[in-house]
Length: 107
Image 1 (cartoon, rainbow, N blue to C red):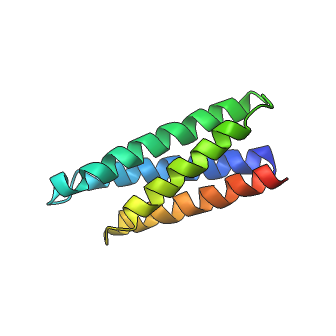
Image 2 (image 1 turned 135 degrees about the horizontal axis):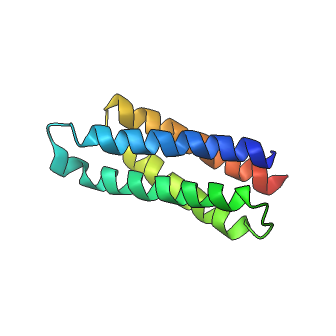
């Protein structure tokens, strides 16, 4: 996996997480969505941080990529607990990001 491909996948995950967090605020049961919102926000921030570091061509990124995988796994698992389409879309984007991160590490 090329660096630019990972950056693109991270961008998709960031967008999905931000959209999900915002859409959760419009749900009738906002209190029940609090953990999902927090997880979405953290996932978007971690993916954004990784994307920014990758843009610098800094080589020592494996630890950050592994942490990104962990946060994306947590976010996907959290979102999968909800039936809302935005949550399902976010979980899918997180799973794709996990796959991309693992592919990058394996290359």
